[in-house]
Image 1 (cartoon, protein in one colour):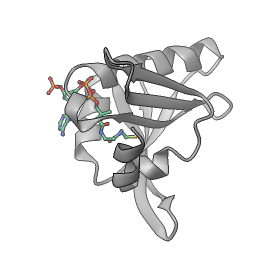
Image 2 (spheres, rainbow, N blue to C red; image 1 turned 45 degrees about the vertical axis):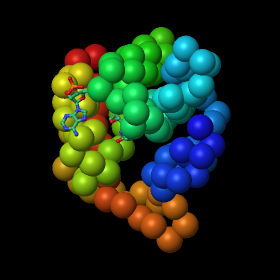
Image 3 (cartoon, rainbow, N blue to C red; image 1 turned 90 degrees about the vertical axis):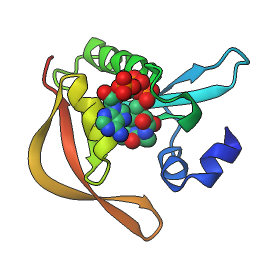
Length: 126
Ligand SMILES: CC(C)(COP(=O)(O)OP(=O)(O)OC[C@H]1O[C@@H](n2cnc3c(N)ncnc32)[C@H](O)[C@@H]1OP(=O)(O)O)[C@@H](O)C(=O)NCCC(=O)NCCS
């Protein structure tokens, strides 16, 4: 996993805080995906599935677990910031009933000196 994270700019940035993570493992106990939540903010901080393991419902399982964890903790409407150029993630979140809450674009620092436009998605089915 370290090699994968180190070679992927987005994954490297997302791995900045491992505080409250749920991971998905393959049969060899290797981590192939993770989701991190911030219970205080009610947000999904990062969600990542290794490219070799995508389209196997791992992302769905991780996001559903993250949502459940946030809702159990008293969060009414879990949210997540998604980069505006990440059309794959837009399709993924939409499929799971998440919608764009606010068309306002916010700049998020994803790496030193690298800021990307993001929009806020909310779990509208909650
Ligand atoms: C988004 C992500 C977490 C999805 O993980 P996953 O394990 O592949 O997701 P699932 O298999 O549960 O669901 C995939 C579904 O999401 C949707 N989806 C995924 N990528 C898509 C794309 N590029 N365009 C449109 N829809 C897409 C499709 O409906 C897809 O269904 P399919 O596999 O039958 O085609 C994964 O692609 C990823 O880690 N991307 C890089 C990081 C990222 O963008 N994180 C989210 C923003 S924080």
